[in-house]
Length: 180
Figure 1: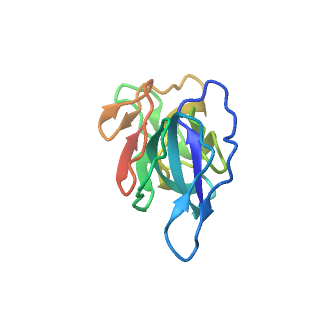
Figure 2: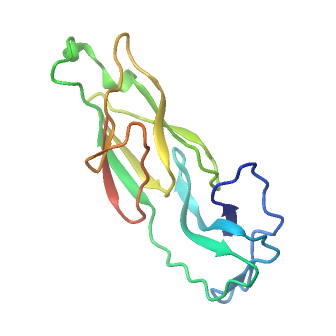
C-alpha cells in the first residue's frame, strides 16, 4: 500500500486523495490531487510486528506546481534495535532491581501510518535485555517510564550517541544498539 503524509503538519488534515491508483500487474503508481508541500511517501507492508506496528519504508517528496515524475522506491526491510538497561556503577541497591518489572515506552511525535501511531512499550527481560524487531523509520523518544522508587534514567545512548533529549530513529535494513 502507498500513502502520502505531510512531513511536519501544524494541524494534521488527511490528504484528500485515495491511498493510491496503481496497476497491480506492474510497479507503477500515481497519486493525484496533492497540494504543494513537503511529504513522506510511504510504502507500507501488511506485515510488521504487534508491539511496533506496521512495517514501511519512506522517502521524502517535495511537491510544487508541477507533477513529480519517475519516483522510484527501493523496498528494504525495516530496521531493528537490540538493547539493554543497565545501572550506573555508583548506584546503590543494584542487585535488588528487577529489570523485567520496569515499564519503558517509546513515543513518536511524527504522524506515521498504521497502528500504533505514537507509542508502544519496550518489553525488558529480567537481565535488562530487549529487542525491537521490524521497527520502521520514525523519530522516537523514551517516555512514560515507570521505574522503582528513587530510580531514574540518566542516559539513553543510540549507536553510541546520547539521545535522551534528542530522540533516535532506526535506519532501514540496519540493526542498531540502544543502551538505557
